[in-house]
Length: 137
Image (cartoon, rainbow, N blue to C red; front, side, top):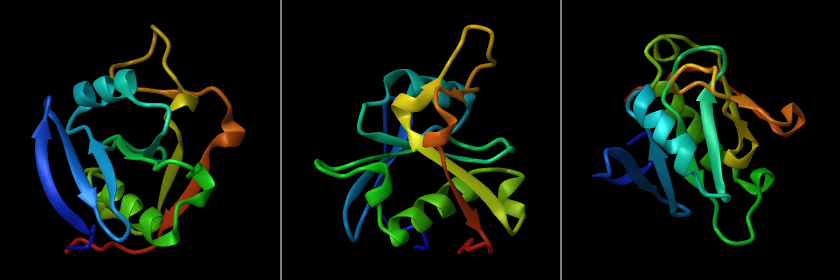
C-alpha cells in the first residue's frame, strides 16, 4: 500500500499501524475525541503530524531509541505525510497540502480549546512538509 502499512489493529479505540522499512509504530485518531485521547496519552518519544490549517486526523509516530525529530528518513516522513493527508476530508482532495509535525511534548492544550485542538509551546520546534501530489491508492 502507498503508506507501507504492514498491519492495522484497533486498540483502546485508537488505530495503530506498523509501518515497515524501517519498522515504526504509528497511532492515529479517527475523530476529534480520539485525537484528544492521543494528546493526553502521548509518550515523550512520539512525533505528532497534522494537516496545516485544515481539519485532519492526529497521526503519531513513536521514535526508536536514539532517534530525534530531525533524524526521520525522507521516506518515513513522506509515508506519514501521505497518511495524514489521506485522513483529512478536505486535505485529501487537494494537491500541495502542508503538513506540520513536532514532538508531542511540544503540543499545548489549554482549557478554552475545542476538543482535539492544540497549539504549540515553541513554534521554532515545529517542522513543515509539503505534499505536492496525492497518492490515494
